[in-house]
Amino acid sequence: MAVQRAPVIIKPNEPTFVTARDGKLWLEGSEYRFLGFALPNLHQNENQVHPDYSNRFPDEFEIRDLLLSLAQMGCRVARIFCLSLHADIDGDLPVYVNAVGQYNEDAFRTLDKVFQLANEYGIRLIFPFIDSHSFPGWRGVDEWAGWKGRTGAEFWTDPLFKSEYQALLYDVLHRRNVYTGTLYKDEPAVLAWQLGNELDSWAQDRGLDTQAWLPTLTTWSIEMARFLKSIDANHLVMEAGGNRDAFLTEPAIDVLSDHYYEYWSRVFGRPYDLREQNQRALAQIAGRKPLIADEFGMGEYANLTNLIESILENGTSGALLWSLRGHRRDGGFYYHNENGSHYNSYHWPGFPLGNSYDESPLLQLMRQQAFAIRGLPEPPVEPPTEAPMWTAPATPDGLNWRGVTGASHYRIERAEQPAGDWLVVGEQVVDVVIQDVQPYEASGDAVPPVLFRDRTALPGISYAYRIRAENAAGVGPWSFNWYVG
Image (cartoon, rainbow, N blue to C red):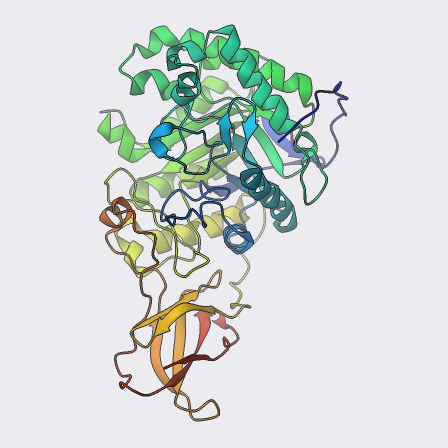
């Protein structure tokens, strides 16, 4: 991604961009509030990646599926994850940033498509640049410093690393979308740039004194926020950790961020009433800047419900549930387990295998409240409009298909002749089939699991199969006939 460093012409805020004023977010004169989801896989698939990496970056179907899922739930904001960085331990796994100033064009074309489609669906995105953690396939601060044989602790203070990070910001904001011709710094689909992901956890994860390190992070954050504002006057800048009192008086930081997790609060022996955590943050902020809970979740239904209902009433600008995974292009869904707990990724519109973490009722609550926080009545769910697509290879003992957004189940029929009588061989069939996600994810298995087996098929007979998507509102169109010998 070659970028010519020309003088920057700053344009004034336009009506297409969300602004911050008086402790709230605004769009075209109206307060802008939302419930939505974290979509870490929207621009890069983390799990179930094929050995040839052919599905490392989502295709248009997978991007549309996630964005349409949000739209069907009335959600208008999502948060993607950070840019991935090369690490030798990950081999030749494709990433966004191969080295300082060296970018993967295929990866960024995926991000271009994400922005193009986000505008189409009316979804705005929060974009964190770098991770404080070292998750496989993503990597972060330590790996950046490691490219020069240095330590992550130096990333925050060394002038060279500061300059390199600013160069990353410059290059990304001045990328021109190949599909729309829009520079990222002019991209209306971006709600806010975020300096990183959970930067305040960097010291804690490495067993360092977090309080002693906090001033260093705060100084770095303010410096980088000011640089961002100097090259992009359109977008909000959102912090990712540091001294909140300092951020409240810093003009370059527009939005404050919180993460609320019952599970992690319990692990670290902290109070885990999420509503109280949110209320304490609001009391400290005292209406001086907008607050977004850009991640919350991994909690019991009552705790999450109390938080969501409180957010609607207390003026928090928005909250994003962690996290939603979408359909795979080769059949079924992507899956992710959270740290060996009983919490897994959510899959719209909710399925029986998610009962242990209240997937269906929680997603229905999110839909209801996502419309409510916008001052809108919850509309009826619409029936599926697309037909599933069969995916190869296929036998009666292994039928797979590309799913339909919003489908709760499928009906499968079989015939011995194309014009013959159709026999129902599967009703209420679902395409979420992995019950124990943790070992499946750990296995690295990239092959989609079989979604349906026709136990009544006789050997030696050729059959035609057809499938349609269904939900509580109705049924969709039939697929093309799939001939299986």
